[in-house]
Amino acid sequence: MDSREVEAGLKKTMYDEEMVLIRQFEEKLIELSQEKGKLVGMQILANGQEAVAVGIVKALKPDDVIVSNHRSHGHLLAKGADPKYLMAEIMGKATGVNKGRSGTLHMAVPEVNALMTTTIVGGGPPLAVGAAFAQQYPGESNITVVFFGDGAAAEGSVHEAMNLAGLWKLHVLFVCENNCWAGAQSLSEHCAAGNIAQRAVGYGMPGELVDGNDVAKVYTLAKKMVTGRRNGQGPALIEAKTYRMRGHGEHDHQHYVDKKELEEWSRLCPIKRLSSNMLAEGVISEAQLKAIDRQVEARVDEAAKFVGPKVPTRCLRRLWRTFGLKMLARSRLRSKGGR
Ligand SMILES: Cc1ncc(C[n+]2csc(CCOP(=O)(O)OP(=O)(O)O)c2C)c(N)n1
Ligand SMILES: [Mg+2]
Image (cartoon, rainbow, N blue to C red; front, side):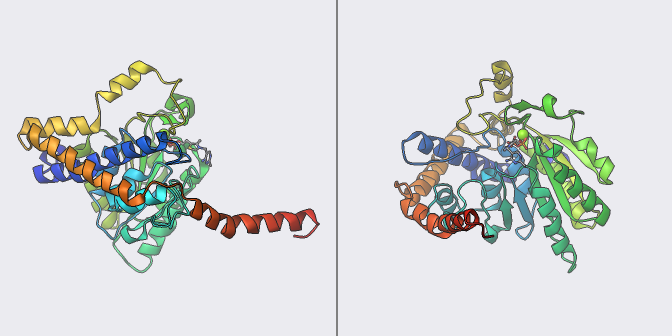
């Protein structure tokens, strides 16, 4: 299938139910983190990278598993996580998907088969290999997709995971979301070859590069790669080239980023590209686009209202009781010479 053949209805769903939702959900987080005491801690957002999450996940079935990293909100929303419970988790509330014990960085949403997210860079791929083995051993046809960054691609754990998946012909789709940055290090500072997809050949699997800001292209390649894995063709690697439009986290003001480069990538915004494409094809009108914006805004506002305004002191107290006191007791024991 050519990416131009992606059906109009599907494009519209990817736009309103997913890409705009992810963008607005994260914009709400920015707003909340700027209001004193509302949202504390680190916020790692995927602004500009929405097409990767949506294009890949749209090619999956509900029973397929995803494993994500620290930049996970888009992956989880695309897989079907409820924005209310996700936002509650990010804000450390007991109503969150993990009862407020994870916060933004280590969430899992088992109901939608989002097995885990991790901020240990390169920590996801080895676990995805384990998940794929668990699916394949009893003969299931479900697959596992793991998202990781260009920085993670330089970690030993990622090479080991890809090698093992290649050796055991596991149904894993490795998705390297190459956003050109790993913290404040640019791709040219941490990647010898400048291309990650071509590494696949060393692990006996196919690897392809795709324009990660074009959701139709991402979806088309994902569909092909997912079908291959489901049919028992072993693992595969997709490198989706995109750009991190904000700092690494909301504390990072990108003083090291070339503003011209940022401007060039902002012209390639995946949401603007899809809406212009749909307008040009007559799939949607300006008025419908505005209506979608308003509907999504209402949904995100509803999530924020559900979460409520207070800093979660009760939850912090519970965390302290669960982990803090134990750690304190252990360190006292050690200082007395115990183990
Ligand atoms: C094992 C490990 N090393 C270093 C870090 C610190 N760290 C957190 S995010 C990050 C950059 C990761 O870059 P990339 O994999 O490209 O993901 P991106 O942030 O661009 O989405 C680093 C170095 C960490 N969390 N874990
Ligand atoms: Mg990166």
